[in-house]
Amino acid sequence: VVKVDDDAILPAPGHRATYFDGRSNAAQPVQVRVDAGTLEITTDVDDGQPRRYAVDRVAPGERYAGAPLPVALPDGGTLWLDDEAAPVAAALAARADRRRPAARLSASWRAVVACLVALVGLVVWFDRQGAGLAADAALVLVPRRVDDAVGAVAMRAIDKRWLAPSTMDVERRGLVTTRLLALQGRVAPELEGVRIEFRRLLSDTRSEAGFNAFALPDGTIVLLDGLAEALTDDELLAVLAHELGHVAHRHGMRSALRGFGLAAVAGAVLGDFSGVVAAGVATLQTFHHSRDAEREADAFMHRAVAAEGLPPQVIASVWRKFAAREQREGGGGLPAWMSTHPPTDERLRAAVGR
Ligand SMILES: [Zn+2]
Image (cartoon, rainbow, N blue to C red; front, side, top):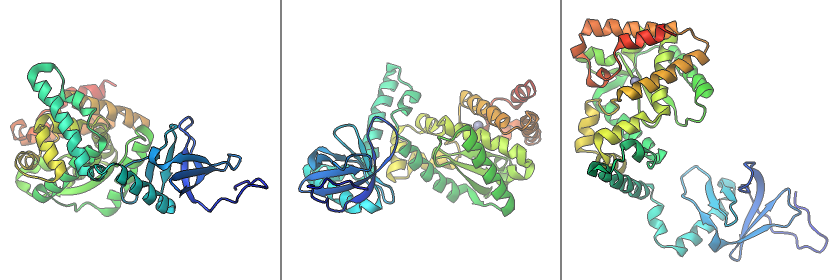
């Protein structure tokens, strides 16, 4: 509803968009239009007086297909333009591109990521020089988008070399997925991109490796048939909660930064997928976590299992099954990424002690 004074000129029809004033977090529906170098935003709650900004003073963000375009306003507000306001988005973006020709470069997310990786590389180089900055410190400089890219690359590589489609019952897959996502909604609703992939290990020659689940930095949790067959639904949920703990703490990215080095992470992100990354992923050591990381994931699992109303015996039972497997396979046969798990009997004591 646009109220108009008697002597006011009726505004030209605008496009619907969403506006945040920068002070409250309430989204306001607005009408937007661009006219003669001026961006006009009319809110329903205003008295019909549009806010006006010189187009040269607003800063459209990066554009992604299918996502609304954020536009930063000089007074601290933000405008979100989706498909309905596509002509306005196009006008603002064209103007911004003309203003700074270098914008074409930053429109490429790969270039942005490369710059960030270069920055992180510098931090790590300082670390190697003994300046005392750890990979964990570098982690905060790495945007989540890099986690997504690394996760996608790793999944493709692992799939190609190690995994085959799951033969697990489709109904049970649905049930496991539903329960995991419900659990995530309860204990870690802020996490984005969490999903579960079901796979079977290609080769049976290393059967112990098929008795596992692992998490990738983008929130993908891979469950292998070998583990699914051995555990009950409740036990599976506990293991998946442990993997969700790795996602919540960004352990995958931490391991990748530490293990591969930044150059390799950059390579993976930029699509130059060769050398160290290929070798690292191929041995499934990519997401080889430190013992501290395992303890953090275990603590997350304990909280999640309690939040689900499941008894802690479920966790104890999981560790008993892992212990039995270790005994059968012989500890030496365990893949390296499992051997850094805290010893199973230590975990068993922690579970039973609760
Ligand atoms: Zn773990």
